[in-house]
Length: 153
Length: 177
Image 1 (cartoon, rainbow over the protein chains, first blue to last red):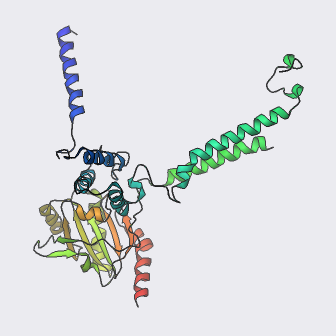
Image 2: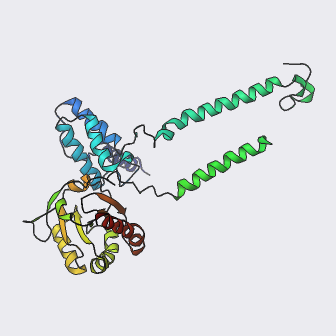
Image 3: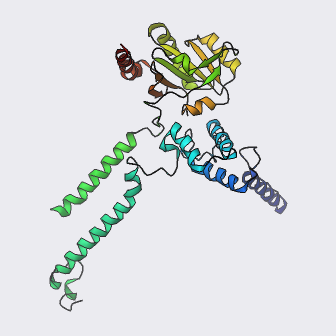
């Protein structure tokens, strides 16, 4: 390919990339109060779009996501609290609507599982280490080749 | 012995967990509305925008509220069964025309038939949000006092009707007597 052709392709590629980064989903102007705008941004990034479940409401182009953004925008503009807005959504769509679910009986296992698994791993290591330590040195044949036994660790 | 049994046991538990997980439908989101009072609404009617359809119209006896739109393929699939229900089942069917073009919606009912006692037009989707709607078709079963008894997400069919709706309708009517 000629260098001019290559250059043209690079320009096109850069333009395409630039276009994706400025693509705005909504036309609403940002809220006057930067704190409110930050709350709007945070909430829309925490709320799941239920139509395309692996996207947040902020990322999705689904009509329902647009409706939910509009509702959240209106509530933020009215000055309602984060708790209040989350309750509004939870009352309608349930806990699945939040990417970070609340701590409830039904979600306890989800929240506690990593800690429990870590604990189980630590216990397993503890048990193995104790057992090994309790073995006489010359019976520790699993780890050490026979030639090395007796010299001791 | 535990040396061999323990890993097998752990593996079996993991397999069981995955089998259950794979057989669940992740697109089904249970409604927090079940057992609660149906959200209040008041919408212009599709047949006559000067009149309104509100949650009060649903009261008096059990009623269905079907959420549909002309852009929804599942709704088209479901429509003949709704027609059948409107003829054979002794239940009033109301509907919410969701984020749709009212002209297209009227055309749809004219050509395919109108199974609904009345249809409310929810063009901006506000009422649908109050009802926790996220994918048409959805069908709510509401009792005489306006309590949400059941919600079905997906096209209605005879099997779902017999299994999920009929027993609840019967029970709700018996309790009222």
